[in-house]
Image 1 (cartoon, rainbow over the protein chains, first blue to last red):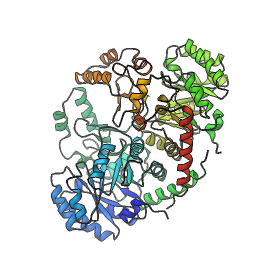
Image 2 (tube, rainbow over the protein chains, first blue to last red):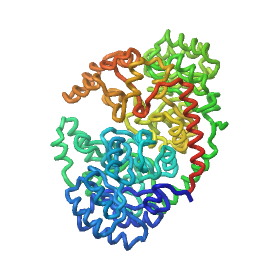
Image 3 (cartoon, each protein chain N blue to C red):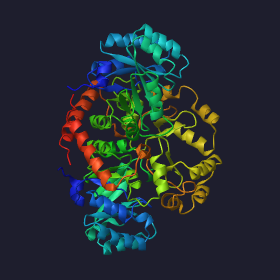
Length: 316
Length: 316
């Protein structure tokens, strides 16, 4: 069994990280992934304060393996969330959407491993300077909030290759063992998988959302709301509303008013496919079934090994 | 030395195809790539009628290896170009930007191998039905004209994997041997490389254009003019003009008027970095030198072999 800096950093068998996703990744999903040998992450972005503590405690009961919390740094309650993470002795934090310089040192002073999610080389270098232990490099194809440069996973990995001291975890478009090997060929030492776990059995997303995702095809997602924060979501009635607003030259304020609050909860957790904001990655087009997290990890590792075996015969 | 359906189809050593690019790929580039063991393509999109015949004849003198023509099917002189290709006995045609059903059979009746460039699974299946021998799957990161679904190379390869009878050549974001191995891990049997050859010694692009590309960094290209035909280009003064037009709610007709005619020639061939349309792929951000085509192919094969050797040690 091979090992690399990502396995060793987290103390896990397989360098497969389940992305911390709003309304999908509570303790059920995170513990299932960690129990299967990957790294499960609680998505603090949709857990607030009290639910975050509850899910951390439930996760600790559900697994004795390492797990972490994904922490969007722009949430106004982030200080309180960090206090909970420290009090509850969560070993790993993946921070995102904000400046890692503010919180990384405090987390590390408490023995917490810190990883930061970026979508550019520029912010990867900043995160490294802030003292993070690894970075997640997330490409244009990733679901949910995304970068402004629109750099794809392939091009982003090429930009990062050989430029960082800390190890890189690839994200965006990765749902198979073959894609995991491709990412590792391009210098990543692990992968973060979102969409495929979003539609797993243990995801807290609504059944209607999961069914909508696995029945979708190419062109079903798009990156929109670039005037606010770019977000990749599935086209639906809500997205059509946005398109009408764009056609009528809506300004960012008007777009923000249409978006309003709570749309991702409505779509992902409550299964409102009409009015909800359905965040998912472009790789959704390739997903066609709902499986357990353990089955996903086993399938990825099996195909990773098979693909590596094939690659060993490649020589010109 | 390994071999696969792409090598065999074209009769070449390495399944590396140099993309047929406007104002870059005349006979000097195409013959240099073919002489180095890849497949060189003349870009008919900027050769018109008389120059196409001249470059085909010069290419035949410059190499005894197979080479081809990239033929955009929407060009009004396409029938005449096809007559020239048949008369001059060009062995391979890569068609793009149009419906392959119209011309594939005629080309094949003359013993010509036909490949069609697509950016979606839907059009890959249509091209296969039209009888093409292989398809090029071109992702969102590719330079020049591009698809509307914005599917990245990684996600597009995942969508195509296992669905086609004909072999797949991956394009978009590929400039290294590592990326070539990544693409082949995802089911491709060859790669088409544009940007790196666009800035090669033998490319007919202007020196100022080449220098601008190799000195650019992340975020330097963008996909724009989606209301006309989506095109990936470098941000420059001309692009700023477009942005102002967008800010002033220009309609497609107005955008077309701003674009006008001959802007890509002005930018790429004549080196007008201000008023020109500078078509190039997102991977330009990773390119930092001008090399001969032979050096590019040798470097890609070397790193492909090294990466495959490393992958053979990957096992969980």
